[in-house]
Length: 440
Image (tube, rainbow, N blue to C red; front, side):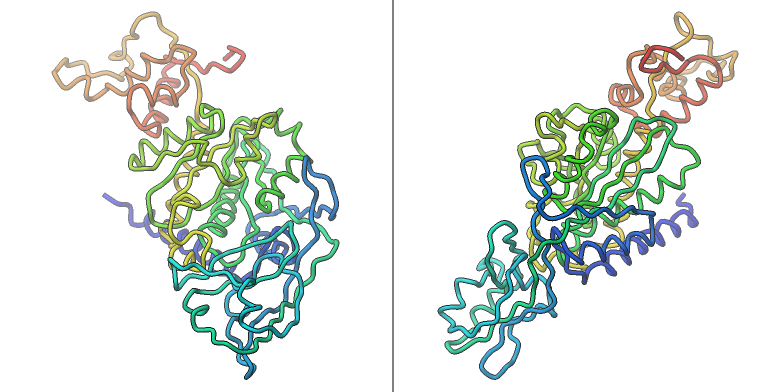
């Protein structure tokens, strides 16, 4: 039976997730600039982010923080002054980091600066030029085909000047200095799944973590511009990240209603990988499993040789793999309350598993007598093992070396069903927890 109160709470939570996506959607973000700041300030209404500014020209590993870009307006108008392509209608209409222009051009002169998709005639593509100065407009193929010979007025009212790169950070302390790392990016304009589902779900995960009565791990949560932001964050925190992080997730593309996806860390066998696979196999066995060769987001930085952080990705439709990716079709109709809630639920289950994962050692030689502890039926029938099978299987693999994830994987029982069984066996004194040092 479905608990109506629980269902109502989940629905309200899903709507709250989608409402934040809707509020953030109009903001024009890039890898630097006021759009990132406005986004982080809005997220501060939900969690106490600390906002950092890193000046233009700062070396960050093999890169340098670029100049800051801001844009106020942009359009292409015809000879009658009608705006045919208008940044104010859709902020994907301008190539990201376009330099300022104010020109009169013929159609032939304008065409090299236009970008469209012949195979998606109603989609505006997302195009950027961060590290080479140029300007351009993006439009649907239908718009482009409708342009006629004549004079066009082109304006891009933007600034490209010394400033800073902005990122947000939140540390949620736990009992241990060992950390779980959550990273997401805030650097794309109005796209819902590729851009906003990640920071919104991460914000609500941080709020859930902060509300837990106790936490085993400390949680480090970063909201960074993709690539240059993660490189900047690594340049400032690499030593402590390598020393403290035991598991991490790059959170992106978690908002549509399609199948879940999993992208492993470079090593593929970290605690984060094991937790993600265990949760997905039990709750969403239809998930799509990729390899690290399919990488394309900030796991490239976090898992790079010499950094080697244990960071995996759990997504819904993976970036690059869904047709609306990096176009105006990645909108508020693609990302749904139910899709966001599903993404939140799976990542929350992964974090809960990290919190509750333990290694146990059975305290009895041979099988303990469960009957006198009221843990085993005193009447022997054919159905006895079905009644207590999961409990005795948990005991059978409580060898002081295999953790709950490993036991769950071995006996084919969702780890959520093992949590209460472990509590029962602990209370009965039949198992004890074994720490990494081998002490109880």
